[in-house]
Length: 245
Image 1 (cartoon, rainbow, N blue to C red):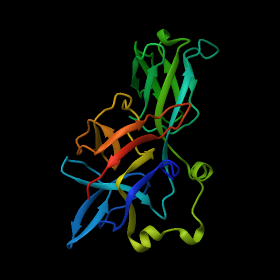
Image 2: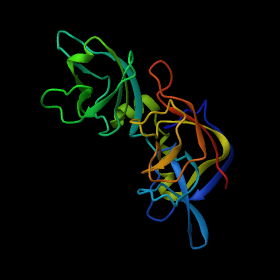
Image 3: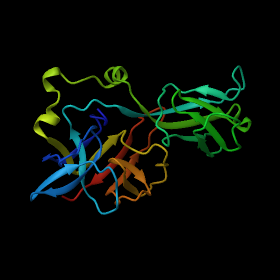
Image 4: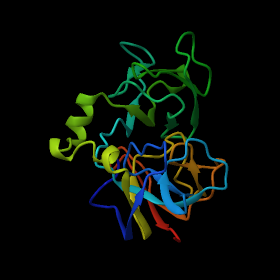
């Protein structure tokens, strides 16, 4: 489940056919509308151009097994025994998704995904495959908030989210429909660009592949941030929305 069932709700639910050739792999993704043979269908856009019509979020995808989710950690940069290096709780981080902020100063560190070599000032090196981080000496002893997305193995996904009963699998492919949450409501989802800052009431836009982002080329979403991912709360992004359908 890629959204929080307890906190997510909407005033209207629609069942829509899935556009030809499209796959809606995760619940909580933002869906767009397209007309095919005179019938409205739902799809996740692989490439956004700013002209898409957003209709809601994917609520029920019967054969979806989450393969990616979000996490937030507050880590303390060590001086010893492995000076300036540490491991996050998870591996297989999504390149481009990591955001690291020094708690005491609010400094946003530049993330370098090439792990070899020395770390530059005001930067952090990240080995996405292993989840290892290497800081500059200026950050020794500092607490750093790290927000990121990571890919799940099948075992991890089942342990974290459970799995469908075997008679309730592959219905997405068999029936070719999805349920869309729309109207007025709230969504708490891990389908967001974790490298962005959501604490400043930003203008939200549709990101590539149905994720929520800031300042992307997609259309502006009729949504407002109500909950920022955090280490002591939920790692999901919470938004209030008002989709006009």
